Image 1 (tube, rainbow, N blue to C red):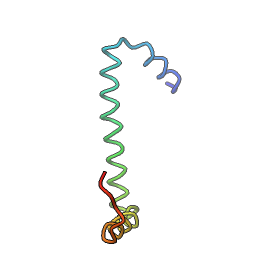
Image 2: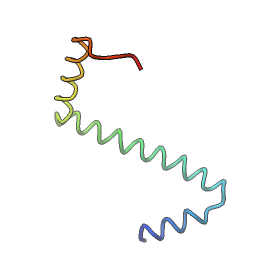
Image 3: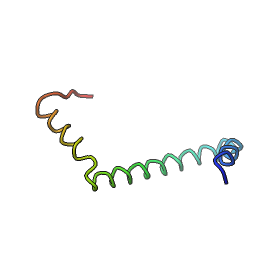
Image 4: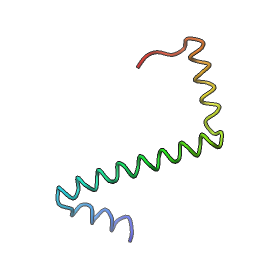
Length: 65
């Protein structure tokens, strides 16, 4: 199955099925993102960014969102 096949199949879904697919995909995508962040954190890829954020916080270079 190609990406184009998937796009065509999704485009033909009835509204209820499309809503269920969208909810499933949102959860699937979020889980994949969480897994990547976890792998990056464990491997040390985020250490520099975390250190910079802590330094910025300590030096008052932050603001509330």
